Every structure is written in structure tokens, then in C-alpha cells.
Length: 326
Image (cartoon, rainbow, N blue to C red):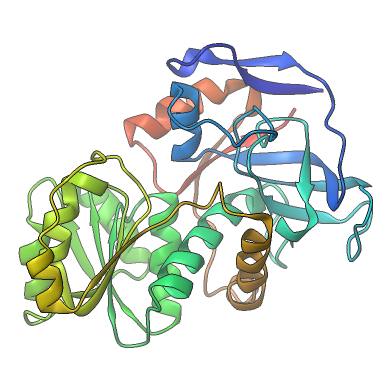
């Protein structure tokens, strides 16, 4: 088969479409013929040499895919050859075929075409596990989402609104904020010209945000704590703004607040399976009912993954960028 390989860490041109060995499904895995994959920030970090896949996993980038099952490994039940699925991957989505643990598969939601379904697994699992399973966002609370126009952000807006929360977002520029508003965001903050701490306090009558979903890390840590409400929960899922910062424990204590940081890729299989099962139970009905949906900025042929990475790094997108297998 062919896959996007990384010969040496570097810029987008390090991504090379090349012939590689076919994957073989192991115990509890299925083989999926990939129709589409999606580009994630973690793929960019892997290409740059900063986020290597766990030992023994596929060396190719791609944390999600959609396609058709072509073979079942030993011990797999509940799935059949020919099923149309999308799945959460540890890697290998930028390829014509990939082996996927059966517990990380989801059926393609009714009303969503097969290729577009590739935009769902990573964002749905990330948002549901962090905002709801870890931070326990409740109806009537306020969620602040940094990077509201990203794939994660567009899903977070929709899911939070679906459960009755108020949503504030940061994004760069009026066009991206307008798209966030279309998805249901209540408070629109342009991080280029506005202070999100001031704006979130103004929007909540001084109370602050109950939950903050953060992709920036160190750069925003102090201001995120300032923006939290009493008993607030800050969940850090990205480090685009650095890895080290001072934490004011006094401010955290005064608010009885919590700071949590998570990744999805390196979690044990059973934890990922539990998250995928929760997404199937809670998120898939919202997708099939039309309340929540994938947001796709554009699609590109998979061999042009380098261009897709340039688009992601430029920030010139809203939602997901998909790669279509030949």
C-alpha cells in the first residue's frame, strides 16, 4: 500500500507519499481500507519530531480515519467485513489501509457521508472526554474555549450548547468569530485585540468561566486561572504557547479551582475504548439528530498532505482539513 511517511523530521515537505508494507490486524483489531483521514495539530508535531508515536504503533501520521472494514483480526466480534466505520487511531491514518483496535471504532453516523465522518472521531473523543468526563460541564455553566474556530473548538461549541451551557470563545479575527457564532457561541473574543480575562468577567457578571478548554498551555496559564470561576476547572490539552509557567497556587486555592492536563494518544486501550463508547452513547445521537455536526474547511488528496499541513499551520481554516485517499 501507500502511506505518508516522514523520512526526517522537518517542514511540510518532510511528508512523502511512498510505498510501504501492508498492515496486518492483530488480536482485537480490524483492517480498514481508508477513504479519508483528517489533519490534527499532533500530526504537525510528529512531523517536526516533537511527538513520536508510542512504541510498536504505526510510524505514519494520522489520528483518525473513515473507511470500510476489509478484514477482522483474531478475537473481534460485533463488526463485519464491509462495515463503514470511522475510528480513533494511535497513528497510521495517512495511508490506504490501517489496523484499528475494535474498541476504537464507531459506526458512521446516519446522515454523514463516509469521507466526512473522518472529521469526527478525534474531536468528539477529545471534547467529550475532557469537557464532560473530566471537567463535568453542567447545564447553565459557562465554558470558555480557546481556539473556537479549530476542529476541537467547533465541536466543543456545539456539544456545550447541546447540553445547555453558555459558550465563550477566543479566535483570531471577525470572520472566525462569526463562524463560531453560527455554531452557537454566545461570547466572542478576538484574542488579537481583546483581553479574554476582562471579556469573560464582563460576560459573566464577574463570576468567570466554570470550565476552560485550553490549547495554549504556558502562555495562558496565569490568565486562565484569573478567568476561572469559583470551583472552576481548567483543562489543558495543548501546548502551543509553551510548556513551563508559574502557577499562582494562592489564586487557585481562593477559587477552590482545579488544573488538569491530558492527552489522548498514549492512553491505554481500555481507556480509549471507554471514551469511544461514551461518544457513541452521548454524541452520536446528537450528530444523527442534526444538533451537532462535523465542520470541514476543505479536502485535499492524501498525497498532498504537505499542503494540508501548511494550511493548518497558517491558521487559515475553520474546523477540519480532510485528506482523501486515492
